[in-house]
Length: 370
Image 1 (tube, rainbow, N blue to C red):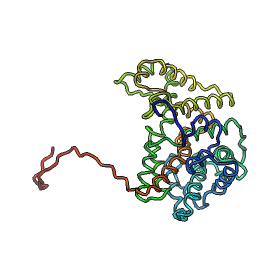
Image 2: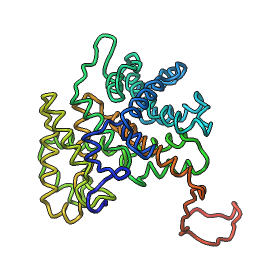
Image 3: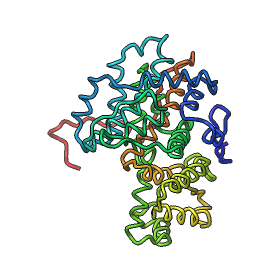
């Protein structure tokens, strides 16, 4: 499927899901193996809202993080701390219905709280009157002196971007979640490790790198051809982020959707972003340049998501956190799949040692400096 540029979640094309579903429906699909009925979706939304608040004592954690703390570091630490406040998650009868729902719901509250802490504003509580993505946007951008004005276009965009990131086979962070879970570690510890893995610039942090790259090109005069030549020169340190994928050797199907979402958001907000102009020129160049074509370096999902998030008001350091919120259902689904395997064993990669095989011990007073 990957070579043909096809992505499906449990048999459903990503295009159909992104266009027609809310994020919570896709989360339900990944964890419960089926799309919810109208009643199941209503009950699931209610359960998510009931579990959206954080224990009040957890606010002390946020207040004691330094203001410059990266939201991904905060999210990882807060995710693992949930098991201390909610020990009933270790009850096998409660785990799938309560723990997974609690984690999906609270992760957006954690994300919003970490952002509010970084800008010195008071925390905004989740509301039972709002949907999942409405709550995320409201907790991020409303304040006691300015209500957040909801736009159906932005809410839909938020749902779509989270759906695009919901799962993607055995990527680095998913493999970490499974590896940690194979030791018998609980869901929260496993997800915390996954968040840390996702933070790397070669993984979830790539969308942040794309924005920094576009800003660098813009500040240097916006000469796309010059930057492309630099990227093609092996002696030059400049790199084009957002191109190529370890799995897809054709156009990333998620990138096509992300581009459409980006266009709709910018049109709705009436924004002309010079970075989008640069991005589109880069895309056009890559799709018509033999260097990129031969190496199958097509735009990936990270290429347009950062521009969209920036237009919606998210700071750059929140991009990867939003990726983590979207990827959470996939991590949870993979974790449960592994736990249900009757032949489950602890993950134990092997390595080939390439150093000396047998050396004679030398007393310290007879050793010489090399």
